[in-house]
Amino acid sequence: MKAFLILVTSLASSLLGWAAEPASIDPDTVTHGHANHNGVKIHYVVAGQGEPIIMIHGFPDFWYSWRYQLAALSTHYQVIAMDQRGYNQSDKPEGQEAYAMDLLVGDVAAVMQALGHERATICGHDWGGAVAWHFAMTRPEQTKRLIVLNLPHPHGFAHQLATDPQQQVNSAYARRFQEPGAHESLTAEGLSFFLQDAPAKVKERYLQAFRRSDFEAMLHYYKQNYPRPPYQTPQGPATKVACPVLLIHGLEDKALLPGALNDTWNWLEKDLTLVTVPGADHWVHHDAPDLVSRAMLSWLQR
Image (tube, rainbow, N blue to C red; front, side, top):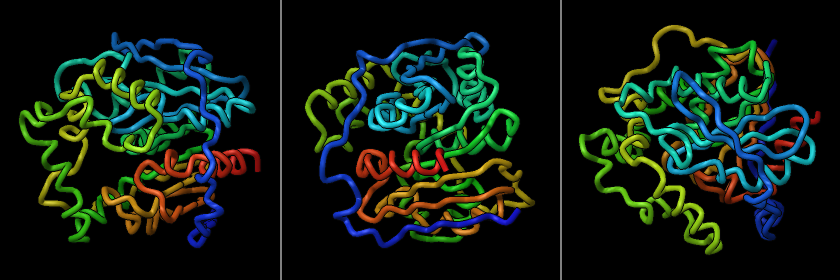
């Protein structure tokens, strides 16, 4: 089946939905749980009832990244937001190899199993988006739908990194993260840089979560899974994603340039809906929370 593309590129900022603060989840109203993946404890929270949606955060973040979407989607779905290994209340296994992509994918499957679900919609941002892509490619029978925020398909990003000098420049931070001892320069306060306009109570929750996290574990994601120079274009065909896909991308993202979205449809078996958000940065679900939540709901309920 040919991929179907809906491209939203020219919304006026007055229509983006970020002028008024939308509702966010009250952390005291969620249900907490833990899944066990081969001895690694993975923490998650649950809000709402119904068809399951599993949400996976990126770097640096924790389950509360999805606070707006938890509030908006839990009126219709059971929304499950997890702490990835190394973060907040999940375990922090030692060693770079403990953060291999297949283990990160297995953590998501463990959460699904702990809640008694055989299939779910998988949603991820940043590194959570990378995990979501790989989950859909390697576990198609467990993936009903796929939603990814600001993380292009792995083939698309690898091609962009190999061919676009600007992407190579903008990926310098990742090369620094891959250096030995890079985690020693990280602090909870420094990792909260993207929260400069957030309310004080939100900043404090992030600071507490980052202080519970393992900075070296955070960077193991980059050391284990991020491409290293010399960058090369992918060889051979990609495993196609078998389910419908929704991509949402803030166009001001400097870490992941939007050119990597090109050709995504070549790696999908079903329809693609692409929403690009001018004026939104890497954390598109924070910059334009109402637009992102409405886009998700509309797509899920079509």
